[in-house]
Length: 312
Image: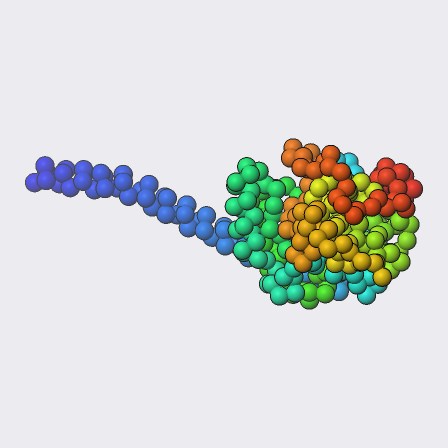
């Protein structure tokens, strides 16, 4: 009998040695799941509350502005806000056409665009395209950093969906145009119009609007005076010249196609803006201006315009 009891005890100990790790792993998994859910609840709550505030109040600073100051020592003045109604209608239409053609109908994100961007990035070996909507770009500028990681992209998508639930599309576009980066220390269309042209956004001429919108994917390497040195930006500009011609101007048939884009189909959205320390150089850095493009005679080089505007 004692021998039988000893065997039972030994069997129970053997089972216990194997059950305890499983129980510990189960507890750890439940703890991780609870943390995952709690983190998402907090994120959603913060973004929804922030969006309610942004629906009535204009931001003075963004996460990207703070990031630039912390990582590059670039201080920028507080955002000078321009209401959407005072921003020329062509400039608004240009942004939607080039950056997010489905802006007025999607719920903040386009899963197909994100999937396509992932496949392209996997094929080329680095993160070039982001598949970001205007709402996602706004979320990144307001709340996140420009670091190109899939985790940031995940947070960006959640943030964009929450913002789209609260903010009207017109308010999202208004915020976007007022906080987007337009050069070193230059944020928002008010600062960009003053820096490059010395005017308010409402006084921007049509070609000035085209240049400001065309340079958005790469405002740290190029500006409105040098954008034709980039093949990508030249194609964007050529498309805008074709779709938003000057009064009485005639655009040569096929000129946009000759620059690498169709006059009917806009260039693919650029997605992720290029950072100054990105190792992926623009494919068209040394390219000559595409056919029909012209240099803006009123544009000052970035360094000169920065000094004139007092920007650091």
